[in-house]
Image (cartoon, rainbow, N blue to C red; front, side):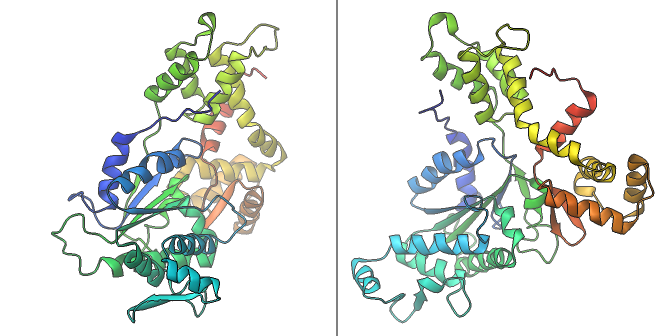
Length: 389
């Protein structure tokens, strides 16, 4: 149903490109940090809108998705992407040299890079590799790291973040601050969890301390209307869908394009409800959302009372969550109907991490892995949403 449909947002890409390339005089030089829930169109925007906008201005965007293969070390993923981009920009002579077994390439006596060892012990640092790429490409580099918070899951990933900061600082030294738009390296980081992404900028020991996280604008009624128009061109006159109903369905599925497309597809093909009648589009949206939340329901059922109490506390406190302070221990004890100690709370947190619901950002700091849990728990608590499964 959605094959061929792309909703472009050039009005959003332009100011973001301004910041990345240093052409916005009011923006800092720390980089762009964008947070949005997963499956809300963030990655599509980066590839379909921001990358082309940067290319149109003469920059070389390098896109890295740290969730493309979550089993791989994020630091290695970044290094591999830089290595591949360098190879794309090798001259014919260098390519011949590499085929003959040479891996160390350079620009005169200025800089030599063994591209097979980028980011590895004894090899070129990422800062050196990006500097080489900048010289080789002859244009500004904009590194876009999607799901950047995943870098925090390994020491190599954390080291890579510090290396990128070092590369930015080193490459942009000597660029006249009054010469707007003359940066050699711009950085864009995105994350599907605001708290986790903020861990890169909060705290003096973090690589991008002092930068700020911006909420990435969610798709809205304009997307719903455009998608309705796209679908209606493929439907018979008596099966046309109303834009206002599509917008309502989009809100029900928390502005996730993939879930809206599933709801529309099932509505158009005539899904039947429990009473044997056809479901309306907004009813179908509730069904799709319930299916998306089914795993949460299953995990909740398998939790101990203490694990549920800890999860509720994390959701309710957000960035202010402190797992072992007196208030949290008292809240656990009340909700779990038992006396809870620090070791008890730690065990519950470890269990939630094993279930993939919670991650440890750093010692003593925990956050939800998927912020959809917030809406799910609110719905489960109020029980106000129709259950149409």
